[in-house]
Amino acid sequence: MINIRNGFIAFFLILIGLLTYSQVHADITGRVIAVTDGDTIRVLDKDRVEHKVRLVGIDAPEQRQSFGNASKQHLAKLVARKKVFIESSKTDRYGRLLGKVWTQPSDCPRCGKTLDVNLAQVTAGMAWWHRFSSSDQSPEDRGRYESAEDEARLRKWGLWADPNPISPHNWRKGVRP
Image 1: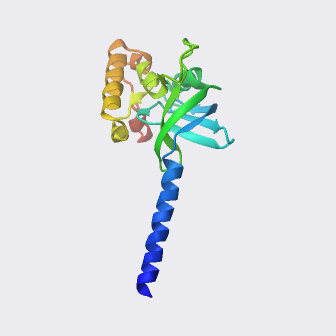
Image 2 (image 1 turned 135 degrees about the vertical axis):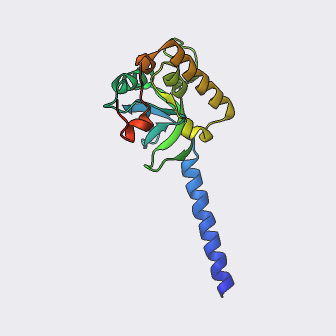
Image 3 (image 1 turned 60 degrees about the vertical axis):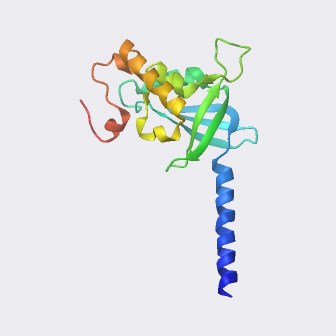
């Protein structure tokens, strides 16, 4: 009797794990319906299900932080009301999908979804490469994002024009000038 019960519990746990995996580890195609800030969007898929998506690998300034509004506006320019493809591998502690967002570049009407939006935010100096979550990225993406941040910093693009930019990580901890 105990063996049957343990077998049922094991089967049930495996089933729950598979169901959870299929829900979290899914790529999504949809239209951006809102830009929350410089690294978070809301997407409506073809089944009219809304997904809150946190752009993986980057950390944009907070809304009340210097460049917070500029970062949000830049992201909106890239994705607002556009169709996007999201590569998602997991959710964060707030239930947001962590994803790499792809869209069609605005200057290439015949291109597919070839613009890595997350990388574009870092390249423009509108977000930091989020080293704390770099394990969620491929080694190639880690190299691209780090190089993009280095270039933006060197050229003083976006938030790097500020002589003492404070990372959102430190801002949330209360570190202020």
